[in-house]
Length: 156
Image 1: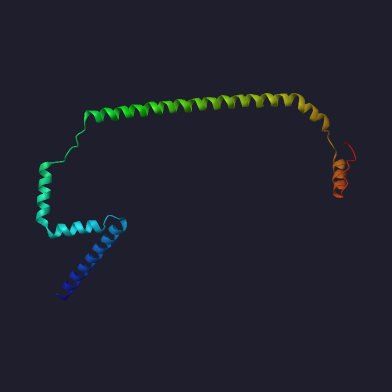
Image 2: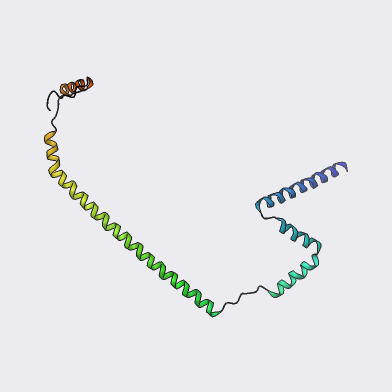
């Protein structure tokens, strides 16, 4: 009998601990607040009134809001205006994209043309100025620069 009483009391303590943990979790999440606790108290104090309210809610059914024809027409016209505004915005954006694309293509053609002109005329002038140097002349150049002399001894 003593062991049975110990098991039952341990289970009761675990149940109380689990319920308090659940209430603390609900309170931390915001699902349980002072207003809800007051509603629960009222339900526990007056259970007969709650049963009457629940029965009347079942018989009445959900109330559907009435919408007039004028409200429906106004909403439709607003939606049509929003669609036309979206179409105008789409056309503006499409024109901007097309303009930027044509500008980018023109810039690309300009760069290609200038690159080709440089390849024809500029590279020949650069090639004339570049002469291959031998290893000893490079060594002399480095040696003279190392001493602070900016003199090219050969091939300059």
